[in-house]
Length: 207
Image (cartoon, rainbow, N blue to C red; front, side, top):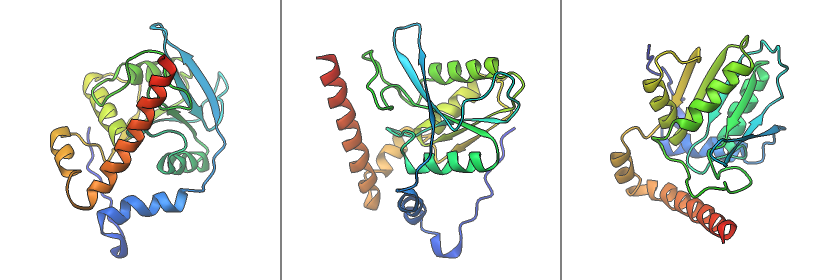
C-alpha cells in the first residue's frame, strides 16, 4: 500500500532550493563511524556496504537499507543524516554503494542506472537471509529512490516491511529537461562534474 507524504515545510523554508541546500550545508562537516563490508559478486565485480554497526547473527534490531542518489556515497551529507537518525533510534543502517560509487572503481565496464534492480534485489535478499529475525526497511534517495520504486514494483512479496522513496526522478525525461532550467542548472553542473570524475577514475583503472 502506498502512502503519500504528509511533509509540510516550515514557513521560512518553503523554497525547494533552500530545502535542498540547507541540510547539505548543515551536515557538510558531520562525521559518522561506519563498518565497511565488501560483497564479492558472481560476475567478478563487487558491492561495498557501509554499516552503522555490524549486526550479530541473531540480531533483532530493525535494519534500514539505504540507496543513495546519483554519484552519492556514505560521505554524502543526506546519507550521513539518515544514518545518524537511524542510529539514534537504536536501529541499524546500511548503505549499499552502487557500483563505482565507493572509494574504489568497480572492476567491470558496467555501472548502474535507475532501472537496474539486480544489485538492490541481491542485497535486500542477502540481508533478509542473514538476519531473518530483524525487521527490514529501505530508504531510497533520488536515483536510489527510482531503483527502490522499481524494485517494489517487481517484487510483490519482498522481505521489506516498509520502504520510503524520497525525491525520485520517476519521469526521467521530464526531470532531465527540468534540471536544465533556472537555478536547477547548478545541480546539473555538479552532477556532470561528479560523473566526469568517476569516468576518469574508471578509465585510469582499466588502462
